[in-house]
Length: 333
Image 1: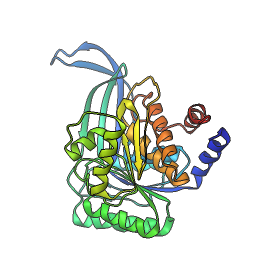
Image 2: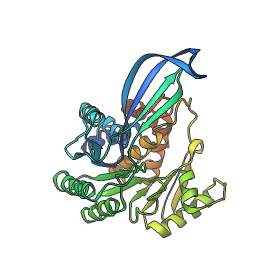
Image 3: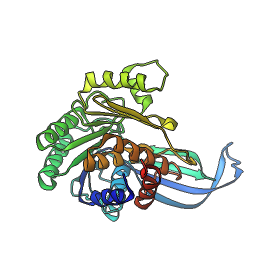
C-alpha cells in the first residue's frame, strides 16, 4: 500500500459514522511532587501542581475515533451528578455527539482519580456502581440505541465493556440483532463477566489474559498454532467473524476463517499502557469499516496501540502521527 493510499484511507475516516456503547468514566489526574513523608502516617506528602480531566473507559474509545475524524456518537448512561456534567462537556468539546447519552438518578458516574508524582502513579481513588442497569434504565438505553441506528445509519457500533453494568446481556443481544438487520459492523472489547454473551459479533477483541481466563486455558505458548486453536474454541461459542487478540509486548493476532497471523509489536519507549486497548479497538473498527481488510486492520491497530503507550495516562491517538507511522512501517509492504 502506497503513502497516497494511506492518505486516501485516512480521509475516508471522516465519512464513517461510529456509535460507542459501554461504560463511560471520568479520569482525573492530580500531578505533583513528593518531597517528604507525612508526620501523621508513613505516607508520602504530594504537593499538587495541577490537575486535569480525561475521558476514560468507553469515552476514550470515542475520543480516539473523533481524533481520527470519524463521526462519533457516545451512547451510555451516567449518574445525574457533577462528574456526569463534566463528562458531557468534554465529549461536546471533543466533537463527540452526546444526543444519546442518558442520565440516571440510580447510578453514579464512574470516576477514577489518580495522584501522580515524577510520572509514577502514587494512588488511585475509584467511585463507581458496578451492578447491572435496572430494568427501566436498561430499556431506556436500548431505545436510545434503536433511535441512534434509525436516525444516523452508522457503519459501526463498538461495545466497550468495563464490567460496570451498562452492557447487560439483554443490551448486548439487542445491539447485535439490530446491527445484523441493518448490516452494521459490530466490534467488542469484552470483559470476563459477559465474555461469551457476544454471540454473532463481527470483531471480538480480548487480550490474551482474558482469553485464557475465559477458556480456562493453562497453555502458556504464544505461537500461531496455539492462537489458531484459541480462535477455533472462541468461534465454537461465539460464531463471530474475526478474532483479534492483543498479545501485550508480542503484538497482536488476527484470524477469520483460514486467514490468520501474528503481527509483531514495533520497538517503542513505553511510558504507560493504560488506554492502549481503547485505541486498538477504535482503530481496528474504523479501518475494518473502511476497507474490510483484516490484515491491514490488525497492522494499523497494532501501530496505534504502541504509539499511545509512549504517553503517560490515557491519551487519544494523533492522526498525523499514526499516518506517518503507517506510511513508514507499512508503505513498502
